[in-house]
Image 1: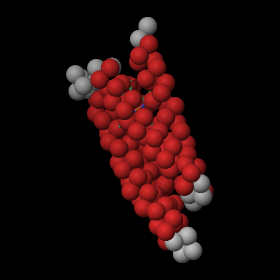
Image 2: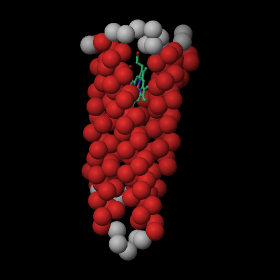
Image 3: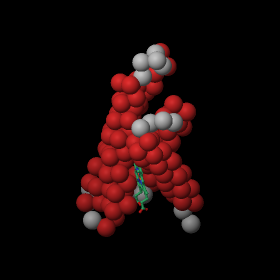
Length: 135
Ligand code: HEM
């Protein structure tokens, strides 16, 4: 039994569920708990990306160039974009709120839009990841 793949896939899916689930929730609620969740989210994103890279090579997708690989690549790219945008937009908005908690409305609007954008990209990622093998 390929224990390393089973373990890595489990870590991958759990990290992705946490990252995507909290992002969807924060997108829907305007980013109320964005501060305490930011580091765990970025940690889960890093874990999802690293375990995904291990799966890519471990399942020998790098040697194949079929439609499934194209879909997985597009999905992974969408995840990387989500992580980058979330880190920059949400990270900066949180830093602005830390500096000046009194004047918080533009920063709060940026928090919400950062999560909405990331949620959209993560939805595309999830669809690509689970459908790639059937295309
Ligand atoms: C750069 C980031 C990522 C990379 C490189 C990556 C790569 C992969 C690879 C290679 C697989 C195995 C495909 C196979 O069974 O042959 C996989 C599975 C999976 N990934 Fe990702 N992934 C990434 C991010 C994500 C994210 C953010 C999510 C959720 C939003 C996600 C959800 C899943 C799911 C649910 C599976 C299991 C699919 C299945 O077995 O049907 N992945 N991923």
